[in-house]
Length: 130
Image 1: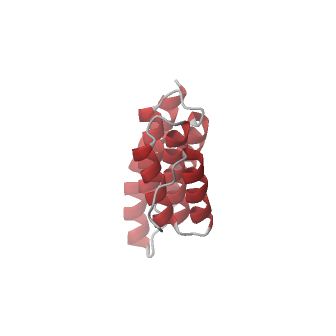
Image 2: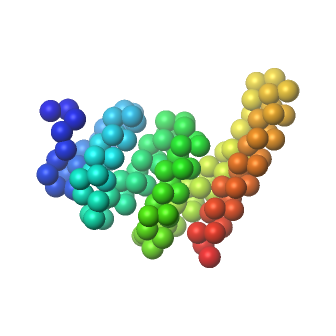
């Protein structure tokens, strides 16, 4: 069945990655979350958490991507993916900082809101390095 969970974490992870590569981000996220729930102690659980952030980023949901990437650091500060989390958060902070709205007023409002959010994301990324 389409929503079943594989019996081996690596198979579930590879299946979810395949779905994500097809651009089916919402389905991939569900598959990664199933893996995290069923195999919480597996190294593939942490990899799946990072992949959820990546899926949201590819989907264009920047705020959600930042939130999901940061969960990697919160859940496992010694994760081998921590350098990728720092790089991703820095990259997304840069996107927030430089995001433009439509007309001039929207740009001003967007810039002000995104500047504060970008600063927070940069600060989170820096905190991960110390």
